[in-house]
Length: 327
Image (tube, helix red, strand yellow):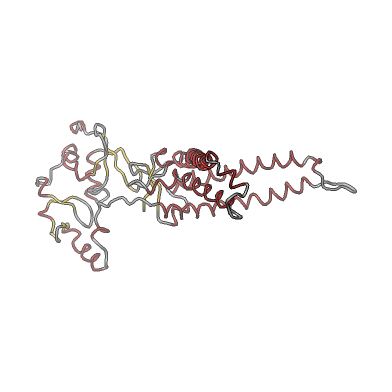
């Protein structure tokens, strides 16, 4: 790690990359509890971010500080603060260790009903599953629908008013330029809807790390390495969701529908169905419904693929290298 050169260090806090700071400053932050054993740190020459607890010796050495006078096996992570201390300055609690500085706070927290898992500085990332993400999407859909209607209703009224004929004896007529006006209005409405969506998903993700839907379920969007998403990443997620996942869904729908109805056609079943031969009334409708349901189910793959992998990633998560995790 080239510790002798005392390189600049970066650390992660609240899903943000902070720094650079010197090794001495990083050690000071650790002593103050701002950085704990689980805090990810990185400096030039490291292949990947690592927890502070695993490189504490190198950092203290680079800062010219003593190594606590204890070898690695004689130090432990405090179950309350998450910081590393010599075991000589700690007390054992089962298979856990607690710093003497945090002993009373630790015992009080246990009396208040908190668990060891909620106290420790090291916590496992919890990814948000399929049904929770469906719920978040429904909430966001309602928000977008409500906001869109606020803008759309006045424009629709304006469009209808502009298409109405005027003057004595005038009557509504399609020849009065209504088609051109309707097309222009639809273009304006479509552009406005996209602008609202882009603004909402870009700003909410970049500013708060979550849309209102994800906030409602206690989730947030982060980069694959756990860092905070930028505004650009928020826009990229919207674009990937809308165009990449949407296009993939459309292609899958067309493929499955083509296979289903193509198979029926090749077997001569479509002719039988639509001519009523051998099928009860409504048989054609039933076949259409079944085929459409199968195609719709398959077309959902870019979205429900998050139910099939450990990190609960949809297609646009993979494209943008993002993850949806619990706060």
